[in-house]
Amino acid sequence: MALLIVCSGCASESTGLSERETGGLAGAALGAGLGAIVGSATGHAGVGTAIGAGAGLLTGAVAGEMARRQKEQTKKEIRQEMMQQQYQGQQGQYAPQPYTAQPQTVQQAPAATQTAVRQEMNTKYNPRTGQTFPSNYTFDPNTGEELKPLQ
Image (tube, rainbow, N blue to C red):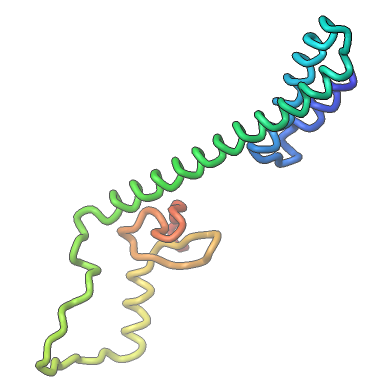
């Protein structure tokens, strides 16, 4: 009964347990239960419980860490896929131009016009970082987060 209360208290979403910690707790609970069953069959339920809890904790923590790494890898792959979709069709648009030895003439627009053009081009932003992006961006290329329109 006490084990159930402890595990249910630790499993609530407000504690923010990682996958490793969650796996460790679940493994320890299962290991302790199985250890108690095996230990009682041999006449040493307490020892079986302790050994089972330790082995279950280790096994559960390893399984939880593997789940966390898999989740991170999946997030990374999704972010890369979103960036590929976002930049598809824009190849060459943001690529650096080759160096030319001939001088090029660049006409400077007045400062007020440059500011208006910059504000017009960047019509989306990342609410978490505050960075602005052109209207054709859907996701932040650095974080993969969805962009919101500027108001």
